[in-house]
Length: 307
Image (cartoon, rainbow, N blue to C red; front, side):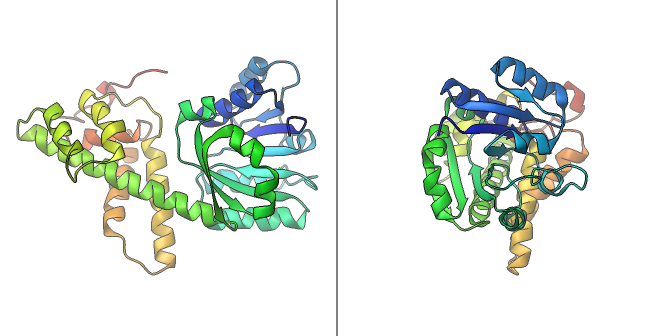
């Protein structure tokens, strides 16, 4: 597997750290690409000899056997695979695309069908982890696609992950990822409201968090986000813009199944409000800026730790 040529399309926080980790393990990372070219060029220089930042997506495909994609949304996914002038499916016969972005299940299925027509394989590797996990190979990956392709490439996937879960055919992993992020976003919004109300009542917030941790109010979000909400430390690990997008994916799936999800709708509305009010690039914990008393008078004064 380490003899295979590996490429990354989308080398922001997650993609770049996945590439660094595989390079550490002596995989051949031969190609990187990003719409923000300086990002790709800097990573190529860092990874050293044998890694090139290509200007064309078709050149990425030509110079790799396995292409990871880590892009932002359905529109970005559509552009890299179906762009009229340049796309990853040009000369894609025999290639494997491993798509890690949180996009709609329909988009995953569309890409899988298009790749099959060009005799290429596709896996979805939906990530439920953060930047530090990408750098250390401790991702949680939810896998979708042909099980035979998954098994054939399991070693590579295990080298990127601490936990690996095969879920099913194309689109199925994306469905579960939408559920994960929907519930996570709801929990985050609920915690922000609980702590905001506790603050308004004059309670010691550390004491409230301790009580939450020992009761039915406990959640993983309490562990990861409560301190940041209290300290107004919204360094971006998972942006509020992405939270809005992912809650929207869940809402679309629910409409297709004729289900009403009012709590998800309320959560999505809060994150959409953050975008409209210029807070979309804060971490999802920044939703507390909308619920704590006395905050959000001037978004420019919010404490955001620089990376």
